[in-house]
Length: 246
Image (cartoon, rainbow, N blue to C red):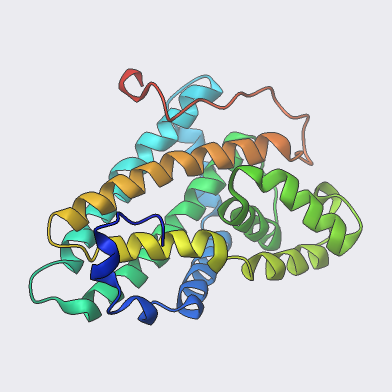
């Protein structure tokens, strides 16, 4: 729980154990499957409609598109969970719902970045693997994704079969809580801070996470090959800098 401000540690101890690893993992995996199964075509349409000519401009447009909604959710759930009289049960329920919804929207974002990079064909298992790889492995997603494919299927990820993808998804699912899950659990716990403080914590954490996720997804799709075309030259915009100029 090191992602939390020091002042939040004592406040959360009374109900922290109720946000269990199994509950977080189940919520995240269900949300990932929802994203992979139903968000691919909308992501392609979203990518096609983004403002911008260059790759960097499109990444900035992605960030702006998701920023208002995701950061707004972080603020709203922080405020609701910390309302006087709401109690820890409300904080817990709101935090779990937040984890699920933000994960679905993160899947939307990852698939949108995939579409920006020209990925047009992918089965559900492959889309699930993309989402899990970025969420679980972060900026090391491409290398870890390929290594896992070789370990489980004896071939590179670019030629992995559907059966191998299923094995990879099961393996990555087991890593959810120790990576992505604990981060989201920490954010949910942070939103149970006193009214106002929790809202701000939720918003700033969501914004930082959004920028990092875009960078990680962009790096991942720059490094994994497309089956349908020669990879385009694209450089990752540094979203941690120059926001005032965007």
